[in-house]
Image (spheres, one colour):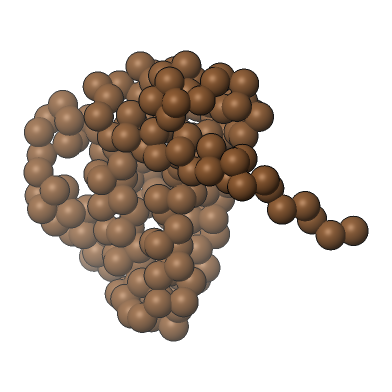
Length: 194
């Protein structure tokens, strides 16, 4: 059975809803401030249209996050070094974490909303699983690394949205300082005990 193509107005409404949500999350003080009613009103559609398009707030946030993350995921899957495949782990791992940090700095409220959505742990989120698997795979090529699985979790903890928000938003660390500190931390982890 072939998959039905969405109606033109449904596709147009979905695009308008994503654009409205994108704008609202970019300007908000806190991701919790953004309601489904706010998104529907900003897009000029009824709440029913929003719920038909996405189901719930978490699904809307996931769709927006995925759309923003897609260029980075494409660079990781098929791009050139240092993000792309085939790059040696000592170069790729720091580049991957730097890219995730920059993504979360640029999308802080959206990342906070996604990591805080629902009652489930952020560690069970699909995007977390993909990043963890990618890092764990890259870390397998690091000599003398005892546990790539745990190390991947620990490195991803350094770029959690709530930590990024605390360091950048509350403590006021600028982008370059955060990137430098993360880079130094990753280099020390990859170097192992001295």
